[in-house]
Every structure is written in C-alpha cells, then in structure tokens.
Image (cartoon, rainbow, N blue to C red; front, top):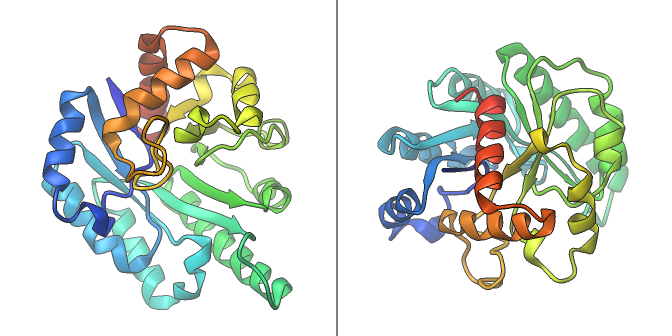
Length: 256
C-alpha cells in the first residue's frame, strides 16, 4: 500500500477525470492522498474533494509565491480549515527565491513574514508542516531553528541538499517524487542513500514532475508505484520495502 503525500488533486487538469484517477489509484495500491494547500482560492475545492473521497485528505497553507494573498480574511479561512477533520497539516509553506527579479529584499521579507506566521499557526494548532523551499535553504534553516516543533516537518520535493538533513534538530521527513527517476538528478540519487529510512515518504507533486517514462506528461497519483520502483532501485532494495516504510512514515507524521 502507498500514500501520496503531495498531490494537487484540486488542479483544473483533473476536472474531467478526477474520479477515474482516484479509482485507478486505489486499484494500484494507494490508500491515501494528501492535497497540499497553495492558494487560498483553491482551499474550498480541496476541502470538497476530501469530503467526497474517503481516501483523500488535505493541508491548508499559502505557497510563498502566493503570499500576497495572506491577510486577515485568508488567515481566518486557514484557521477554520485547520479544524476540519480531514486537514492533516499546514502547507505548503516556505520560501521561494527563484522568481525574484526586482525589489528582492522586500519580497524576501514578505515571504519570511508569511512563513513565520504560518509556522506559528501550525504550532498553535499542533499540526505538522509541509515546506516548499527553492533557492532558499539557508534562510529556511535559519528560520526553523528559531522554533521548537512537537510535530514533524516535511521537505516537499526534496532535492538532495544534506544541509537540510544535518542542520536541523527536529522530526524531519523528505518527500521523494518523480525527480528521483531523472538522469540529471545525481545529487538526489546520492543523497537519498544517506537519509534515515524512517524519514522517507513518497509524493507525486501531480500534475507536475511526472516520473520517467512519463516525464513531460501530466503527472498522476497513479504513478506513485513507478516512483517507488525507481527509489527501490536506487536504494538496492525491494519495492515492497519502500511501500511499507514510506507508508509507515507518512502515517506517523500525518497521524493516520
């Protein structure tokens, strides 16, 4: 059995075939899927999907690239969503410096303020955190080290930076997705061999980052077994071991 810990089922790309995808995923061995939050505008849709399908859960959060939407009203919506029985985390939240091209310092300050606010909300509501980091690991580490966490921290789409592994003293998890199958992902393929086995979880980040042999296509939770197979080959173990340990880890961090 598998858990897809990061899958944007609320994407419009699934509007016409969502039920088919979920049924196919169940037949392929998926037992749970988590929809991460990104934009407050999509939160209601994610909640409705989780209410319609027993195996679907969601996280509530505002992506750093959408941080301008963080205000009193959106904060109130996040707080309400975190009380929902199907809400399992705050996220995806964090820092993303990739697209910053003007007024960089102000943009970084705005992202950091929103990140800190949502960290504190997660601590208040006793929820784990799903982190998005891009070109920002130094600041991510600096900020996280200012807090004490009772719940886990998930690095979504882990890219292989061992600084995230060695510089933080908390319950850490690493989302391994389709990138593990890419020929140019040597850093990740080497780093994952040094991760504690009790920290590895699986994700698709669908509809993005489909694994080989579907690279460039619309990704799907149906491809979780393919990701597991690539990871098993990389770690020189059986796919059943990856399925078991990743499901145990995801169940632990999300409280399933």
